[in-house]
Image 1 (cartoon, helix red, strand yellow):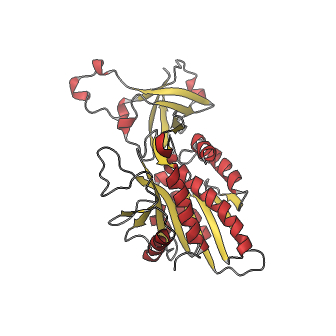
Image 2 (spheres, helix red, strand yellow):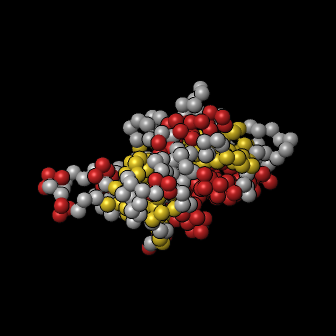
Image 3 (tube, helix red, strand yellow):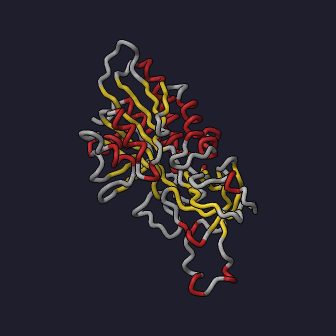
Length: 343
């Protein structure tokens, strides 16, 4: 598990620039499915019934492959780089971060600002992204030939194994979901021998962090009978109550929301209880804020469910997930697929 997840998290793929991680994920998925990469950087893998057998149902499993990051907006001749967020980043976490600027080649950099000693007192409590810049240590007008507006910037963080099966790394939102779908495809490919009359499609969708764009375009093309999105959601940490959020290591969070298919949600609940798969529930008052919302609105509508992986420190440079949760999400989805989807 850890080697594949580490590789997925280590390869950069910020929204709109997912090519490298798409190529890697497509290679891994192609061992178990027929794979293509779309023009907008989504990966689609298909497992069909054996030749000559009728397809009774088409089920889509989705997880987004892009990650949050930064985008270069201006390059000063003095070597300092201005930037903005690419995805939902909180600027408060940026100051002092180490980053990689993906220009002509990769450049190490640090996010800096005016030292607090030199700030006016009124500015010390209101540091914004406009006050920050990236310093790569380069002081020359030729920097503009090496780094250009639109180049992406990623966090320069590692992959760490913590206690109790926890993993800390950039991009576990949602490379942990991508990992689950690759492992699910491995298990489902073997089901062809059991002669299931079901077509399975795996969508590793691009540009989720900027509006679910890859899921919208690909789901329109795929048009399954039903779908389940796999994403991350909030796990309890200091200052976050567990009566509203999930708990790390306590299993998949089954989404319950007006925007989701009740039939799929109830089937996931029943399977988790029947198979003794550890699970928890995530109740949302309206939309889920995930690809599931967009997939459910494609064409005349696609029934869609949501299974989330508990995660601490979402949308930061170091996001924590639990290995047992990844295994249990995989088992839940495998049992769902094996029974033929929603009942």
